[in-house]
Image (cartoon, rainbow, N blue to C red; front, side, top):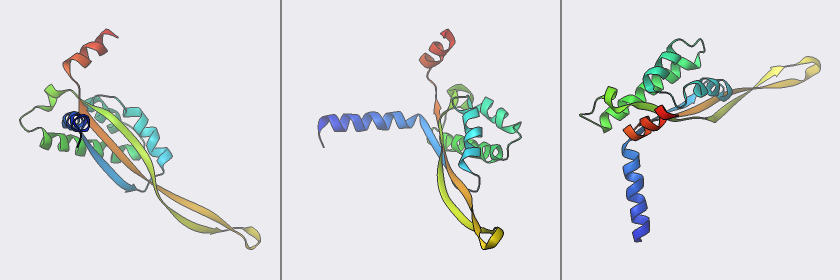
Length: 141
């Protein structure tokens, strides 16, 4: 391995220490509906995101709330000895990908059939901690 490649790998490793992720696979909700909820909490602090999801009327918000709790638990196991309140956790990334589609047939008039596509999705949440410098730049803006 070359020196530049090794240095880049070490930088990536250090950057991944401050962030943790959780994945939800094959969630039986359409990706379009899940993205509506994911867009609400993207970039928010974890406590605020949990409050928003708790009082949302969407069904997808329950699953996303549970997923963020899982990402926080993953962060705790990775950073033992640190307090969540002092680390300023926030939803760094959240994205929804399409998963398998179950195809069903529905009877239609005149001997025809219509396809029904039951969609599902994969959700990935990345939780990171903000540095003090990042917080100061957010306050000045």
